[in-house]
Length: 341
Ligand code: SF4
Ligand code: SF4
Image 1: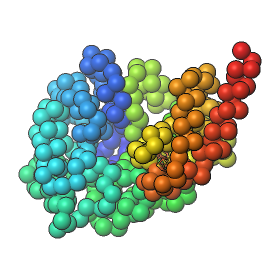
Image 2: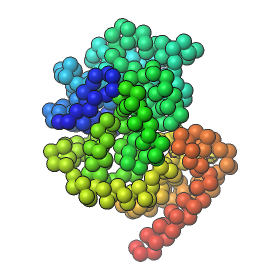
Image 3: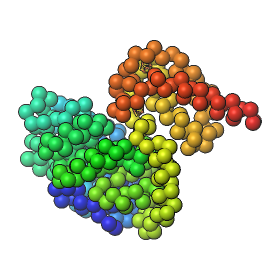
Image 4: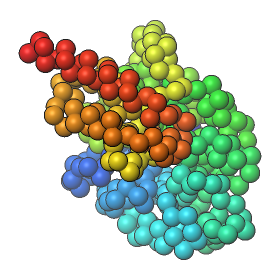
């Protein structure tokens, strides 16, 4: 399999990396089969997080006997020295290992630095000196924090949302990251779920060989589809057509399904509402024509325009201004769907 060098870490990762977040949803036995198949077919990079409940434990059970042949990246979401240190100890125990290859600070609202009051970076550095982690990384959804991490020279790996729908400045960020000698790991290569064509995704990353896509997988058929593209590349003409059409419709300014806009004081499912436009066009529409969905859309009328969701959205989307048109769009689909039944 083609490999991707992660900057100055020297890590040679398989061309696709296994995103372990969805493993939480499947029983241990199925996960073990899935991870072993991935390993047997050459996938050597596994990305997890302390936050992903039992994902680390499942990796430990499935892959500890081949630990030295794979790379494990995990994350800590506690932004204190003590939190990072405790998270790392828990991760090592569950992963059944004495070190992780990359420890990433998980989407911090600032860029941790040496000597910072939070102590996060110093704690990671101590763990590196003790050999418990080999490389220090950071993940983020906010472009300005990702840029600060690149410019700081403190991090060896950046994980950032990256897909063929990314904006021009996000695409440039990836180039700047690689130029700075950092490894670039692509979070949400399916645009958080709005991209439906695996072949187009695979084609895009074959054209951007410095970016390591993290593919979240939980079912055997998902893994088999991706392994299939490694054996037989997707038709480039078809893939380019899909990419061009998706870009024309969605590029840059779309909801990534990250959920940072929550919670809403009025209980509105802002993330689900913001995705409704794409879901109505990309999912079987019947899945959304339920009383629960209808109620969720009705709840948008409770909005008091407090602005909390907008202030938390890393993509600067403004949900309260968009919800009325999304509601109308949903009602139009609802009326059509129920009229023809
Ligand atoms: S602006 Fe509206 S939707 Fe957003 S958090 Fe406030 S009440 Fe909820
Ligand atoms: S509206 Fe913004 S914060 Fe909320 S899910 Fe979408 S992209 Fe994320």
